[in-house]
Amino acid sequence: MTEPLMMGPPRDYSVEACERDLAAVHASTTAAMQVLVEEIKDESPELAVSGQTVQGHATEAFRSVIGETNPALVVVGNHHHSAPVAMISDSVLGHLPPLVQCPVVAVPVT
Image (cartoon, rainbow, N blue to C red; front, side, top):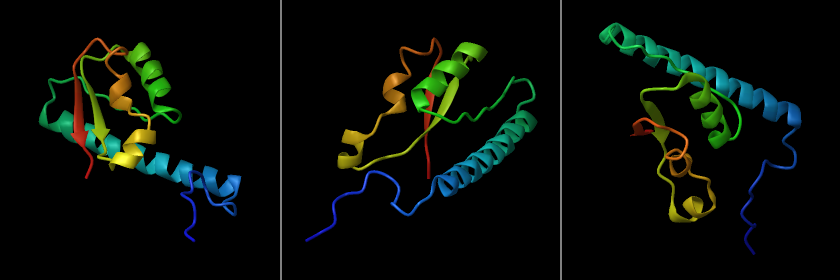
């Protein structure tokens, strides 16, 4: 008999370990995003470019950031999911159109 598909962390994955891992991912993502923002600013100094990482549910995070910044363009990473994962995941791109009044660019994450 096969094990059922696990939809959460392993039982022996502590809250402290989860919080530590989330903080590490957030720090790494923020650093990578800042490098990209600086590269864009160096290549195109006439553009006003900023980047922000926010923890939480993606749709709520976008709503909060977009409401605060009123962007001219939103760029998001886009992961390709298999059909079973796509059926149970909450697509950020599916929620963006009613949240923004500007163009949205989805960049494939490799």
